[in-house]
Length: 277
Image (cartoon, rainbow, N blue to C red; front, side, top):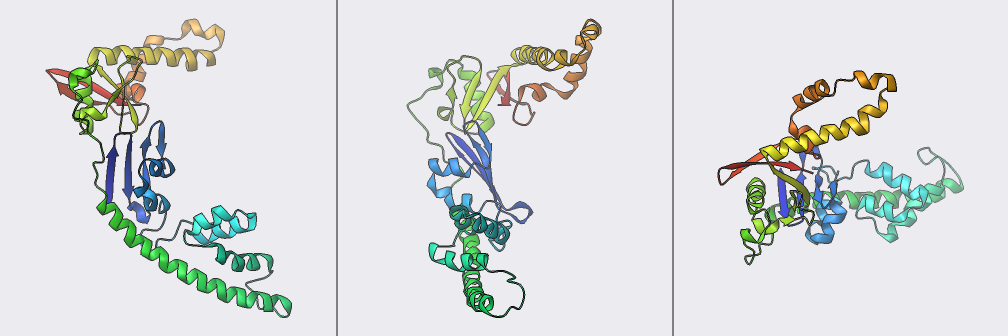
């Protein structure tokens, strides 16, 4: 399954691809695993956040028991409990006893055996309970993903397109995102920048895109190429040939800082080009 949720200031995709749950997206300037930030906006996503990188069949966190043992040895009890999700404070005693005992996998006698045998039995009971709760989490998270609607944007009906400085560019971006224009914000810099669904966007005409592309390549030459050239070679460096080769990658490679893609939408007989930042 794969489901993408869109809000005014975030996008989030929840999947079970490759056998593991994943919750990723964009919130503000942050991209990737956004669970911690997302639940501050909408607490309903907490279970999806907790299930990130867990097995989609068993619900077991990736490297669940191994990481739990590491955290308990380090004394990081919060990380330990978060790792296992259903481990409670009263369960820590069994883990601490096992951590302090030696040669737990061997048959031992005397004091160590008396200490470890009941601890192992209690630990096994705890683990069995946690494993069952993990399986229940799988059912719950699928139900939750089905329940939460994909479109979580709040539309402001009092906003009109003409309220924007660049209404056609706002309309182009709303078409690309398939969202209402009232969810889009113009930046205060008046530089063709907009914010929507947790990301920043550049929306420009064809001519503006070419100008920004040229400027971006010039800046790359200045900041990255020239400083690496020996002084006696700079006069022989062919800027235009370098740009010609660089432009083979397309404008998106320079102007889309997110994934290098270029998108376009037509509004009032004009094509606008869109780049995620």
